[in-house]
Image 1 (cartoon, rainbow, N blue to C red):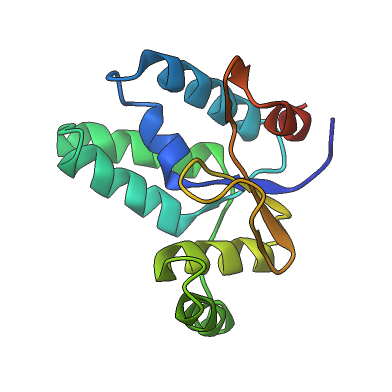
Image 2 (spheres, one colour):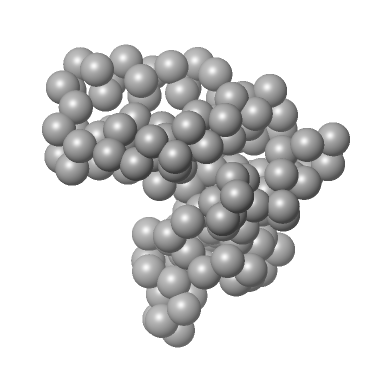
Amino acid sequence: MSGERFTLDSNILVYSVDARDTRKQSLALEIICAGASRDCPLALQAIGEFYAAATARLKLRPDDARERSLQLLKAFDSFTHSPSAIRAAFAEAGKNRFSFWDAMLLASAAEAGCSVILSEDMQDGARFGSIAVCNPFGKAGISPSARGILA
């Protein structure tokens, strides 16, 4: 076990209910199951983004998306953003390296003690202060770097 504290971006949560790509859906479910038994808190922002994407983009019924969101709240510890995370997100978004919302998620995760975020939407290997981005989707399943984090 790596012992590394990590978090999941909302895209991993969304893939878990997106039947349009069964390969990524299966991998996302594996990642979420592994995260639930490890030191993997979720950002309340990511859970909210999951609900919004599941209902708007994937057309899940609101009560189904709500139940899935509540299951995430029950299975994972959570964290939120602080004023200092918002200030860091403003500064980073101004450099055009990350969107404001990605920068907010990264700054909040760093404050929560995470050293890695598993995300397909941000550049693999990118860093935001003490936190690194790791794309968990490899050509042959979960990427080797993500596998090491989930081990």
